[in-house]
Length: 148
Image (cartoon, rainbow, N blue to C red):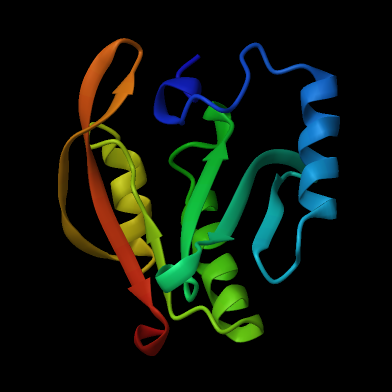
């Protein structure tokens, strides 16, 4: 599955209906000041998921952005719009001052989504992950509240 190749390993594959129920339950029961999670809709159907997750300790005003969308929705601007909307929401509803994302370096489409949503490229995290048995680089992007 091409979507799975661009995600961290926490998302099960194959993804069952029970996996969906469990994920939705976890997001609904999460602390609403720590976890901001939404479904991505396209043509009145759930097409993906997006979330911003507050970090801890000295990074408590920083949050990590994660997202995915069904392959049939790629290239339509859906994810760029979702990223813009969730960042605006989080900055408006919380004290978060920085949202960052770490796409795999080979995921050019995800990097473009972040760039089009106003994120700034900060650098490459070399040999930062192991995915599908390969050591890979990740890119660091961020959006600051003052930049909205």
